[in-house]
Length: 293
Image 1 (cartoon, rainbow, N blue to C red):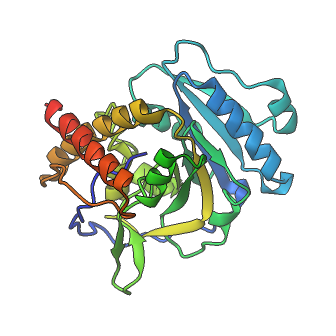
Image 2: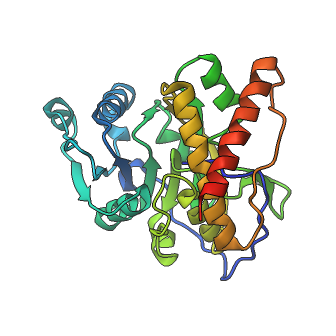
């Protein structure tokens, strides 16, 4: 879910590189954790059924309600289109635990992780089907739903795109994953033990998962698969998000024994307003980082 740092981790594969299975829509289980976002689930399902034909439907859609104050429901009109949508409950804190429960109940060979504040496009699934490189996980593409100045900043900064690094063939590959849109081979997910449930916030749990997956197999980009992220929570949401990411920095730092202290940076698109937002981003990250024990 989060862009933690532009730091490149140096990790060695601990086993022989795993080779995955072919990707077909009917072998994919979509897993979505949700907390108090019924509107997000409704928007996701509404867009999905508007943009996908029946032959593109996944094996199942699993929604995991993570301690919501009001129980999440699936409306009858969605179930009439596709009956294999289920709601699970997770009483543990954090999306890591919620996703683990979702995968435990999933029957597909592949797990497609998305967030409840994302909107699928017509290439969400087909974009992965076109990638048959035997990777064990794929990082999809995440763009901004809206075109506000703040939404454009998220997109130009590639906030929800994993860090690009080079593999042995001098090709760009993701170093980790971001769960706003990523596809993971279930066998590999189970081999590494899934998400680390000690990371109880939405910040760093997906980075850690991707780093551990990269030690047993290859990760690839699947930029053709696109979701649209809704950043309609404005500047207050921006501040809270990056403060949380700063806490995630500190957690990843402890796990991997590396320096994840946020540093000042220049925005990718250098405008006056982007320079101001970048400083605000750094400040929120820094406060979050030092507030995490």
